Length: 244
Image (cartoon, rainbow, N blue to C red):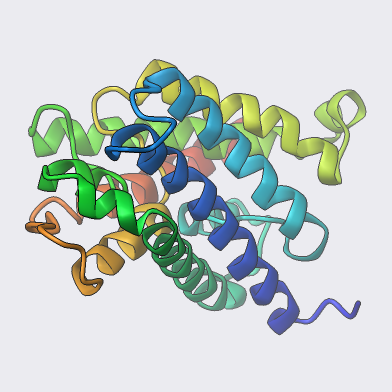
């Protein structure tokens, strides 16, 4: 298959849609009433989110590099590992994929959304909200989590690591473990968006979809899981450039 920017964006779209379908899907499965996964808990969510990233990377990796995250695209561009000219198209594809993935989750679990009364629970299946609202600290948490993610991705791509963990699809496994670790260790404060396409696009889907009794979409907080990951990605790229 010819590797054009259009082809790359198609796979970024598909990979991100799968990421959100499986990632938001596990949150819906564990939180919405009547689901067989109801009450599965945080460990189930963090493990499944890691596996969701792995599936997205397997799909998109050979064709687009599987960024699946605007913060990753920006971080790689700042580090000189990705062309700035391709960033807008990648980000648009990722946001579109995130939106479609969230819509699919809603259709899939429609009966369970109807059976669930709490508006906050429904919102949580689309996007993140902090456990304790403290926007400066929430911003810091999102930045730190994303900085770790992007720095690790940059380091995994280096020759020194490539010999040990491999490139291409095999590289999805350490990233999977990394996503799980971030979720388990650092996710409790904000829900670890660490990806604007994972939060902003599904939040928009929540606002637009006819979710029964859905309540507000939390737009007053929405800038945090966008600005925090982008800041963290830039910091990671700066640290990487300082080291190498």
